[in-house]
Length: 272
Ligand code: 13P
Ligand code: ZN
Image 1 (cartoon, helix red, strand yellow):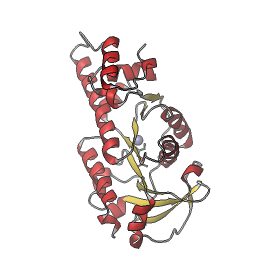
Image 2: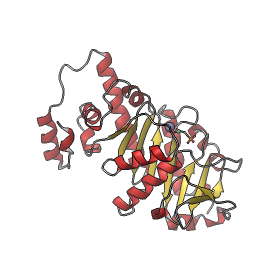
Image 3: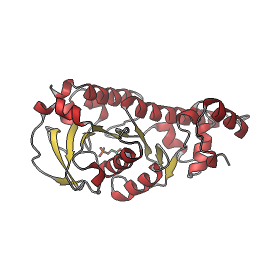
């Protein structure tokens, strides 16, 4: 099958197109990676070519040796993925040591995978292990309200989570572990990869101060839905603050009742 006709390509494109329309991807902002199952790689093998060059990942991910990833290109625009996936996206293979990658499809007009590949792959390696292989998506975006909040909320997991949980009753059901906050860091290297991966050991959402948000998901819907939920909470927070701030809110007892009724494992460490 032509890789462009594959179901996973359809899911990848739908996310990039919808997310651009949400306003989360100015210019080349944000990046998306999908760990492609062996059966799906096999189904599109006629579209693939040999690896011409192995290049360093910028991180070491032995847990991903031999795996394939569909990844957005560095400097490529999310809004263009739909129009020409072969120019803006690549299918890459990881070598046997988990140190290098090679392109087997895409980026036909040149380019390389996203500059955040060290963070994406480190998080894939971690989540693959923690979820018994179920997690397949790592996704980074630049959602406006969330970024705005990183200029006014305290940059710690507890206060950031609590503020966002309070913004919509069902938010703690969507991210009951809470979220982690990485302070401002230089994008695109191993240092920010290490800081993010450390937080992803306990969370599925990580805020990058004054930059954006990282989420994971078993599938495209889950990753998109998580990004959407957190950004919507941030938007409500911005509106509440613009209207003069909270006059009433959801209490600690309310959260505990919700956790009981919905049978969720709410991270009560973040509830003061
Ligand atoms: P890339 O174009 O290299 O994916 O970078 C965009 C980005 O958002 C970096 O954090
Ligand atoms: Zn970014």
